[in-house]
Length: 141
Image (cartoon, rainbow, N blue to C red; front, side, top):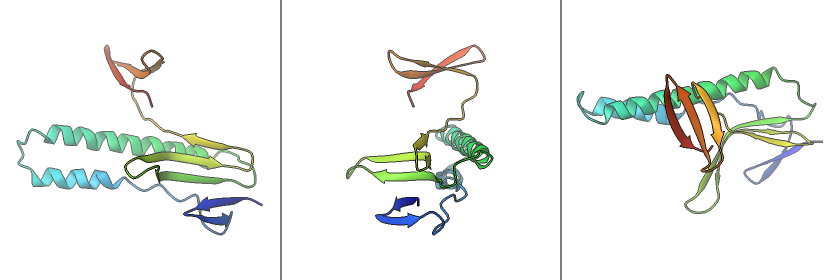
């Protein structure tokens, strides 16, 4: 028997539909609405448009992984939880893109949709992207 704890309640697999479709991030709509409230020449518009593009790319990467997971053979009892948010303290939150639970293991997937050639650097820990002869450093995921 496989159980999962959600909101302090244990559920048996099958009692709830755990593998729900992923929702489009609400912040995309918030950013779109904020653009309409600004003048067409406002200096923040390019930044907001880049943020919308980045959020859409992230969502596309996560749904791509979701489709891959649908085709993957798992053991009889498993659960896939998407876009989890946990409060660690009053001011610190943790977000998990995808968590796979089976009776034998728990896997956490942090999905990144990044164009170009990427590499991980150890000192300092960061992600390096090379695209069109430009090198960009990101915080280590």
